[in-house]
Length: 202
Image 1: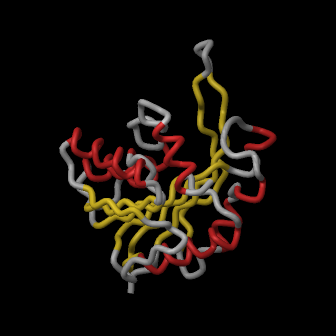
Image 2 (image 1 turned 120 degrees about the vertical axis):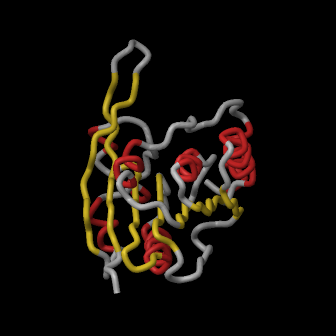
C-alpha cells in the first residue's frame, strides 16, 4: 500500500485504527532501558511513540501517511507529551548515524530488499549500546495465526530480520504468540516475529 492508500484507510476510521495502547512486545522489549533518544520508524498513528514519550524518551516518529502523523500529533497533545513528527517514507529516510539509543520498527511489512535497506539504516542510527526492536507479523501467521497481511513476500521471520542486523548483538529472536480478543469473549493467537538487538558499546 502506498501513502495515499494508508491516508484513506486512516481517514475512513473515526477512531485510531490500532488503538492507543502500545504493542505488548514493544513494552516488553523497552521496559528496563534507560530513556534516551528514540526513533520510531513507520510510526503509524503514534501509539508506541507516545507511550515512549510518556516514559521520558525523546522520540522522533516517522511515517509516510500525513493523516497518520496528524493523528499522532493529536494523540501526543491529548496525552501532554512532546514527540517530533516527520512525514517521510522510511525506505528513503536517513537519520544521523549513531544518534539514537533506541530504534523501533513495528509492523512494517516490505519486500525483502526494501526491508533490508530499512534495517541497515536503523542499524547505522544506533549509538553504541543502543537497542533495535523489530516486531511484525510472522510468516507462520499465514497458517498458524490470525490477521495481518496475507502476502508471504512481505511477512517476517526472526531469521530474516537477524540476517539484516550484522554487527549487532541479538538479545531476542523468536516467533511469539499475541492473543487477539474474539467477539465471543475468547481469544485467538496471532504469531509475530520479535527481534531485539543491541549495538556493542565502543
